[in-house]
Amino acid sequence: MIGETNGLLVRASSGQAGEDSLEWHLHPSYPQQTPPPSFSPMRHSLSGKFTILLSATLLASFGVACRSSSGTEQKGNSGGGGGKGGALAGGGVNGSATGGSSGAGASNSGGNATGGNSTTTGSSGRGGYPSGGMSSCAGSGGGTTATCSAPASAVDGVCGLSYGVAESSAPTSGLCAAGTPSQVSGSDPWIWTCTGVEGGATASCSACLGPTVITASTAGASSWAAAKAKQAPVNELPGEFTTPYAQSLSTLAWEDGIYISRDGLNLYATYIPMDLLKAVLDGVSPTLFYLYRRGPTLAGQVFPTNISPPNPWLHADVAIAQRSATSVPFTSWCLSNLHMATGYDLGAFQGDLNTAHTGYDRVVYTDDSLAPGGPKIALLQNVGLSPSPTGMALPSPLNTAGTEFDNPHIELVGGVLVLFFDSQNLQGVTDGKHVFYSTSADNGVSWSSPTEATTVNDTAITNLGGPAQQPHLYNDGSVWWLYFSAANPADFKQAIYRAPQDTPGDWNSWDAPTLVVSAGTTMGVGEPTVTSHGDLSFVVIYQDSSGTAVDTYDADPWYLPHQ
Image 1 (cartoon, rainbow, N blue to C red):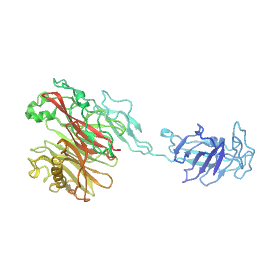
Image 2: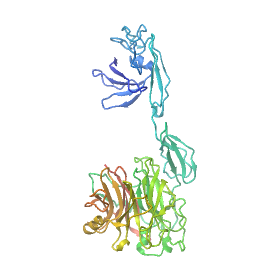
Image 3: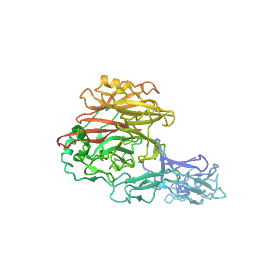
Image 4: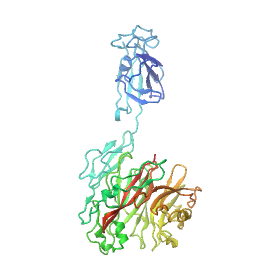
């Protein structure tokens, strides 16, 4: 029913058992204003109505009816001018029950109801929302008592602002944005959980020691801040994406092999504290790589002053950065559990999140220690967000000795695992990296022979500046897209492209590619990965023209938000 008091229309409705609700909105003839402060709105609709829960005492003062689950109305006096046509909420002037006669009304100044007491026993949950609370509206004159309740709502635990932030000691605040925090345990990383409310999911959170700046003679020798300020890539699809920007956690270490999880909350990189590109272009022996050291090392990362056999390669470990929401930036790299204490590198991390986003159903990454001839692909299944390097090397016909397998990406499609990767010497390739794929119908136990994705490679060679590499699969809800990097014929710098799948289910059927991000004033861009929202994460390569003989290039993570 609807009652009117001081221009306020109130509707009491009965939904499912135990879930009665009340709604208010202003009478059309009443001046527009906010509701009385005693009201606690629960839900707002576009029509301007709020659903509210009030004690019967407050309801009585506004002349509002309580409705029991059986639909029996208890009527009473209307404050502030009297109950026209029958009083409401808590008994009439003479204490009459349902059907009682209309009285003259209570005093305008007080608007008190005579008769019809009420009690409120409900408790308030998080943010003032009822959490399984109950209230009763006691009738008068022999009227029945209505019992009302609000169903409890599950609230998932959410990590707070300390999540993923570099700390010098165990965090004590900002642990949870929602839920109940546990004790903080461990040390680098520090670990805690946020337990959900009313059966909500529990979130796992962590923080680590920040990067440690090294004291090598070449560290920071070039004016990198000024050099980077003059360089930026170009968004070639302004109708779909906004403005690209450098991630704020960028350092002067080499941050390559960038991967962002589908939910946009976890960022990974192959992290090497040196100018890797300059060392490779100079063709120096790995025993001299220490001369190119630059930027911070991560706490726990082993990087000796002089590298020599039997550890001829520096530690290219996987770093991780985490955040609690996509609306906040990544703040600092931490050394992930995917690292080794000896001299082989791990990198090119990519994972397929589980449904709870608490870990990965499967992860692929590269490991130089698996077999000679360049990086090989390892597979992990049912692991956390920062897994240890205990992956299974993919069997033949993949990972053959003397052959490179790099930049893997894995997806489960229709019960079949689909693996894309690139190689610069598989099946006679000699003109740079080409994209290949393989499938497994038995959850990774066996794999098909690698097949070159000729529709994208041949198109890139013919119409672009070279073959495709660094493949990444993305489904927009209806179509699979292959993101990749290739040379842009306009400037012959590496750029990011994408191509839609032409024939569903055919992984060698890709339509004409579209340029997504060009290098602009940078040296090049690559390593594209895409979130479920469509945001693009990628790498930018810079050159400092005023750099030194061992400090000239840098690689940083960038981000291109989808509109």
